[in-house]
Length: 116
Image (cartoon, rainbow, N blue to C red):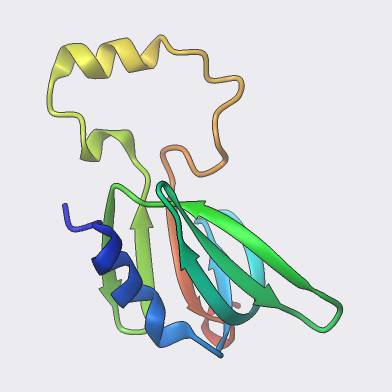
């Protein structure tokens, strides 16, 4: 796993002042021009600007991160960090009614022109 805060910053920096899309395999979550980003203890705050307004999108640090070309892939699959089968079994019994929409998903950050 290489998802330390410093690595995460290095993956996000090339997108500064570019119009990007943040998407899952199913849909685009956010789009806009990345103005600035801030790192907090557990989240990255991405400031995205579109034609109407500026919004802050908080995204948790991924379990794993990789890059292929212009696409940065954030991995939120729980099996990435769970190697103990008992722990994985216990997690299956957790209340998932309030889970994040990023749980067990891949999230992609890429230029908007490549998202469509």
